[in-house]
Image (cartoon, rainbow, N blue to C red; front, side):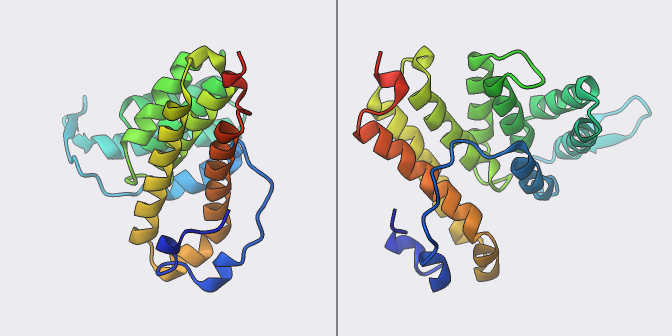
Length: 215
């Protein structure tokens, strides 16, 4: 896939020359976590406060961030139950990063029972946060395109699959506009991975290669 001319004003030429990599179906949990740690400090557009039992208040984002940090720490210590409880609490507060991680776990059946409906639900919540949590919204939209391509369970048409790939591309463009030149250069490999995944979905639809379209 060639990088669209719309990227050229933002991305240095070295990025344009990046060699196309093998298609990537899902980012590993480790990559997602490393990205979303940075997202946890994003300022909230909705500074609603939550009353605590000790009389203090905390913003919804601050509370979600605390759950997120605890959840990731517990998972890294292989304390799965406590870790997942915190990730679920974080996701329930509409934290895009936690929602994306939770959707991915439900899809893979890792640490939770495999549940495609829950995977779809949480990836859509991640997508709905846009670029607020950096890559979470983009990853949510792209994961949905891939799920719909791979799983006949969802019963999605070609146009619906392509629509989610387009949603992912739109968020990627928004991110590139918001990034500085240094941020784009530093993220060039990850950006190319997203481009490859978007192109892979489109090629699979075009060539009738989506497993979900075979049944």
